[in-house]
Figure 1 (cartoon, rainbow, N blue to C red):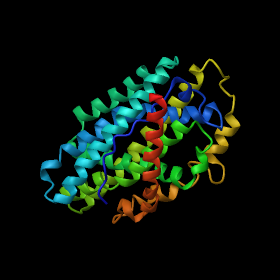
Figure 2: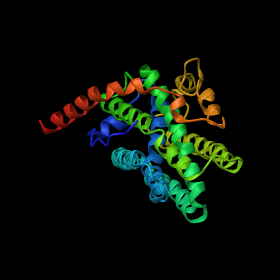
Figure 3: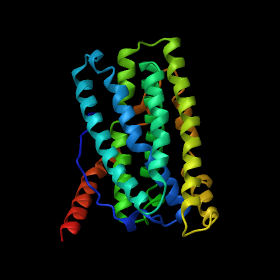
Figure 4: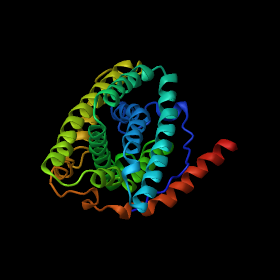
Length: 278
């Protein structure tokens, strides 16, 4: 699977980032909290893969690395614009981004390069699982602001398209062994605890900072969205545990059929461009 870099712009507006989800502000702020991680996180992923690029001898994997870097750079750019609009709406986004940046900068300075790559492939697996949930359950965001729907589906599709690239780099530079399995598996355990801890804390911080709602407004909808049968995280445990299998590969979860939706998404993004020009 060779990813493709796509320079899409979704032209978000101040109106499109505030209370944009049909299930209410609690759910919107969950996605907003995720967006806070992406610009800094994508740069960390790019850096961790680049550190090993010279050791990759497979020309097809080299092409995939180039496309992976291009896609992650585009994701970072669009989520920076998203986050800037949240900041303009009065949310303490840049302070929150600063905490994520401080953590990842610490990791770059203190952790060995292989641990950084292990964290990257773990978080890429986690984001691939979340992407799959959005693609399998389009109704989770289908009634939301159309620009936000397009942005999140684009991100989900491209995360799916490149979900094995960093993992394949890890396999190319680290031959199978018990030590390397432990490094890979422990990376998922640590990354999951940190990511979920930040995501929950940031969702609550955004809700508390939102002066247009009470801190518990829409909580019932949020809990159903997350944990009810068919909810966002309800079916994530199985794919998460699959990562711990010694012979696991991301394409064991083969959902490439969703990538047929990309052309429709590109056309939609172009319409947003034309609407702005008009």
